[in-house]
Image 1 (cartoon, rainbow, N blue to C red):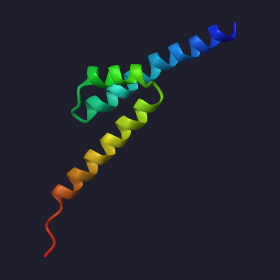
Image 2: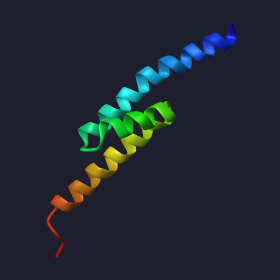
Image 3: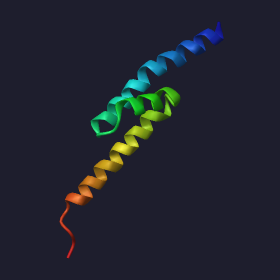
Image 4: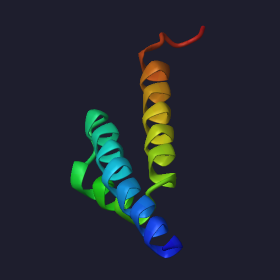
Length: 70
C-alpha cells in the first residue's frame, strides 16, 4: 500500500512538474519538448533549473541593454 502511494505521488509530480518546466523554458525561447523531457527525468529539480536559466538570461539581457560605463 505504501509503495502504491509513493508511485502515485511520483506519477502526479511528473504530470505537474514536466509541463511547468517546459512552459518556463518555452517562454524564454528554449525547446518545450527538451525541457519537458528533463522535467520527466528530474521532476522536482527541473523547475528550479529552468527558473535559474530564465533568470540568468534575463540578467544577461539587462546587462546588454545598459549603456557602457565611461
